[in-house]
Image 1 (cartoon, rainbow, N blue to C red):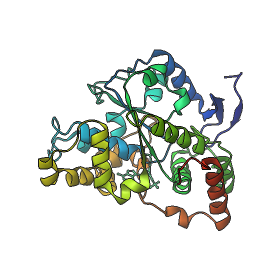
Image 2: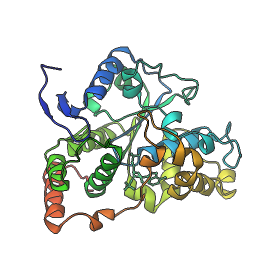
Image 3: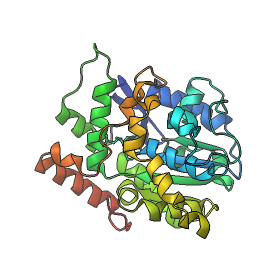
Length: 306
Ligand code: A3P
């Protein structure tokens, strides 16, 4: 660690710059063994997000989609009813950091293996890049991502950790100093890969999926080579998946209200509002202008807007 550039973090005391991105000490440790030990396989599916971009929602949708034969959506025994999506689809770098076997009996890591990470493209293990393993990336607009992150960190902080002021946290976010940041570089790299390798990388936006969930679930199913049959579509199955994975449903399940995260917090920290545009209640005009300017500058010429 001592050889890496270091900066003040929000929740964790420090962030370390590794391969151009900022990671907490825990994530860095996990990343190093993930890169070293993990062997991707052709049928693997990797879900990737920048933190607070709807990771848990993506996990619920993809898990439900690919397991729809073995776990019927309306079954009272559907795993989502009793298991938090993060336990069904583990973060590989965190499992490695905790020296846990990523293929835990609780998780969905049977074939196709489904797992997740917050790592930037540059830090993915070579085998992820060299196999036919598929990547699904979901991003969210930086305004809501920052606001969501702020609330999340406020809830996670222990009683004796002082919360940094909102304006200071905003400044850090704009300067790229956030877990897996710079946020814009993370998103842009996956956007470019999705254009270069559309068979390998599917790029989704939280806002689009919120607005047209049916359309994007169909895209997901096609990308994963398990498209919905006409019969499935006509039977209302897609709507059932949307409902099962909705914010309203997931956030009201007992397991997601009272169960515990890896770090001992309530699972409810992963569910707040689940809306597009809550930034309007938190950011000043100047803050919005600053975020918009960075987005414009960073994404200039890429065809990507957020
Ligand atoms: P808000 O804080 O804006 O409500 P992540 O899973 O990457 O940590 O992202 C968390 C964000 O996704 C939170 O956003 C959370 O409320 C929202 N979220 C959780 N479940 C969701 C769902 N089923 N549909 C839409 N958004 C969801």
